[in-house]
Image (cartoon, rainbow, N blue to C red; front, side, top):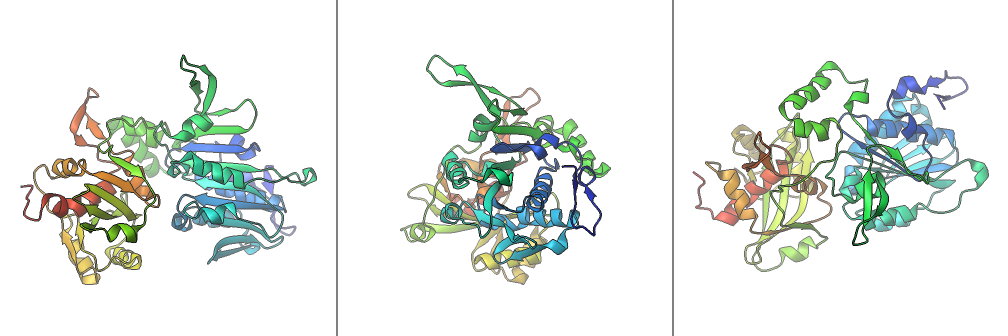
Length: 443
């Protein structure tokens, strides 16, 4: 379908002019799994949002479920993208958009777009629709789902027969930024089993873009080069990256799989735990750290519990957001319930620390910095077991990609990369006094 008629009295919208290039097969595919691994600015999320809104208006009995690992991340991602898609298609008058509960309704038929997080599995597995059939599911930032069994649970919830005469079909769409090559998504959707090794394990041929022989999987890789809406300034960011950081360009620029070796921290695991129960244990103390960002980097708040006797760190909450003024940072931290906590912040921004203190974060302090402070902090943290609550998706992303840098010959050096380090730095700030002692100095 190359056009969409919004209303008999309205002019027909030509979809190629609205959507753009690079996603024809993705747009039209009707198999069970539609998977897009895309670099930054590859318009994968915007294309998916446009496709969902168009489909909902085309198929009058279809409903859609939109999912991320953590529910609270949906409003500023998929929900916003779908509102943008409605506006771009000129269909505002035909959609009711509600934020409480998070929900969108196509007024002419009552079809709905539902929003759920895998952090509340009962709400996912028990979802029922008021009209028609639950046909489609969009999983945004699918790399956040590190446990394949969690995806299987979601997959099994999109079941049930659909009358053939409706023309409807069931499909799960996964979109995500490049992730490390060891993630289960790579084998499941980008890997074709071609045989077995001597031990009977499957041997895979991996594809950047392919349709499985049974027609049930279409998996593809896109990048910023297919986004004709980028301006010169946007493109220049990638061209500079291509020259200055070729390894990063392969992942963030071209959408390649990240080959993650040389991790700074290997002493961690993802695990659900009761924060109140852990905090009541003898010797367990809370620790909060803040790393500042704004335009290109996020402001990042680390929230953890630490036991020196058990040599364990529990990561239980996080803030991770770009373009936050100091006033808004204070509002966010207060809303999270941590305004009265002792927060260690990046000492490079004393003005911001003073402003936050005046705004209401009375106990915020500058972290100590000095010669070898980064490596000394890392060394202490490496001696602890790090247990990460599944809700801390950004922390999981960073710690899974935070590696030692390499020299021009590809050899590892004793300096971490300047990337995936916002919460990693915030963790060091938070833990410096607890792990090294208040009288310890890096100078």
